[in-house]
Length: 237
Image (tube, rainbow, N blue to C red; front, side, top):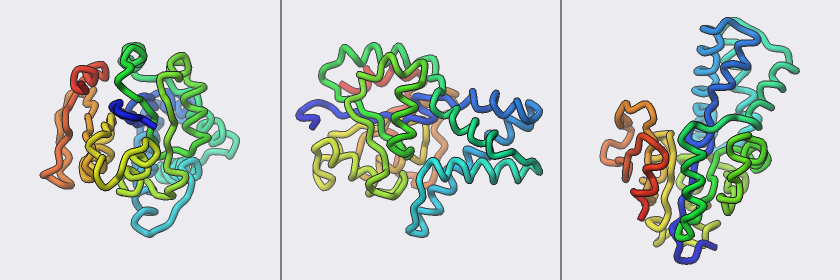
């Protein structure tokens, strides 16, 4: 339970953890340019598959989706990977490095008793727990996160409203009246819009400084935009 504390839910992949190292892993099998292209397609299909499954009322684990979307991306580039190579790439998800601004921010969060920080991800419980525990950058700060909340029980993916309601319930908040007590921090616009549509506050992490462009629901905007993760601490008072 979060009590009267402010709940801050951090998205994991693309917000705390960078998948840039995956490109290096792919570079062991393909040229640098193709590795980058495969990585981009992989991420695109990974997200697309979650949205397709939501739309069809179906569910598969994020680990299976990650594997299947990798196969799709590789095949699209006219290439093949053996299963052991695919297994190795998936294991790399367990030891991703964080973005440079993450460790200092988590260090500061440790001194903010007014904030309850949690990880909130589409990944499976095992996948996300491994990522937090085994990431060389996150593991020293893992105690900052009071819970790891995933979509396993909901069997839907962000930005489905049920996922954000599940977060609220896990944190002892009412999905019908207390969503504004929750803050999402994410580098993914679809996640920000999903949270805002449910009445949550949401901070978009725009490390590339490209500005907010998402127009899926033009009236929905982030509560705040930051360029460095540490700036969230001045936004959330």
